[in-house]
Length: 486
Image (cartoon, rainbow, N blue to C red; front, top):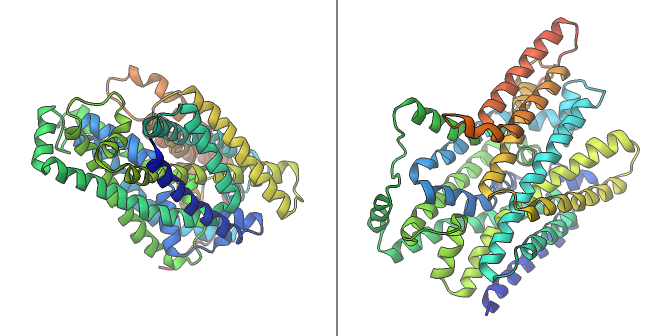
């Protein structure tokens, strides 16, 4: 029976429910709910920015790629590490200062005020692409929970995604930003411990690294990160790395964590803590994929269950339930952060701006929680349709958000010439390219991830359109002094 696994899961969720109830006492307004009133310390900010990034992708999607292709595909992780480091360096300090100065709590409101857009077009475009791509992103998390429920308990996929929706809606509704920050801290430490412990323990059980290495070579999979030195090999590595990494500059659920830190001077401390956590987590996830190759000598029908199946066959049922809580934890973290961004977009950028500008804080808080429910319903419908694997769903949503918003974030922070016309065109072009690129991907001789053309063409579009319209008399972005403590 599943009594041990159920007991472990119940214990775990009682703990996080307790955190939610405790943190809900700190929520008194929509400002508390959406951005924690910018009161987070550097530990909370670091873990929130990173733990809210790694979902079931870390335990299921990414290890499946390594399991099927070997170490060469770990360039995905390299690209993520490089670009997240730059995200802390060039985006975090400036976005924290400017959003407070402009009194913004969302991406869309920051763009509107920074670009002097009173028409609301930038807000609407931003909100539109947020809703499209985040619905897919939340759906990816639900798919992970559905697969886990089938594998662990043998229950229907539909019940797994239903369970995920209920947990996330209840938790986010209770505490909002503050609850998620504390949840990210607790679960971030927990899942890091699990992702490092499991591959090390199973490696020892298999007889050491030499046994794993022999199995990988026998299956003719890569144990080297060095690509072939022809054009296809080099472009493949560049596309793999930056096809993921560039997305960090345009992920609202990550960048809003920078906006919530209490003291700008502590951003560097957050960077060291967060990047250390990220490096160790990705090393552990890569190891899971490599160890899985030797553990399952005959392969797996569903590679995305490699971590789950290894754990089930190795540990006591109670420990199985406890360890797999890490998968659930990481998935719920990301889904919750994404839904919070979405409901803040609906509340601040649509309801408050276009429907009820005089809404009270309590009214906005109610709309925020109603938005969570609506987003959950849409994501549930997409997940039920099973339109793709976790890895592909995350890549699609990640590319869409990164291409839509990444170029504009960078130019809004560092360019004086960008204006609302360039911004609108950039969001539109970047988002559309990312959305339709997968339809034509099979026609390309050399595989290029959607992020690369979407990001670069979006960046160029903003610059060119802004330059042309500025010459025609358009007003460029507001010039702000944005110096930050070093």
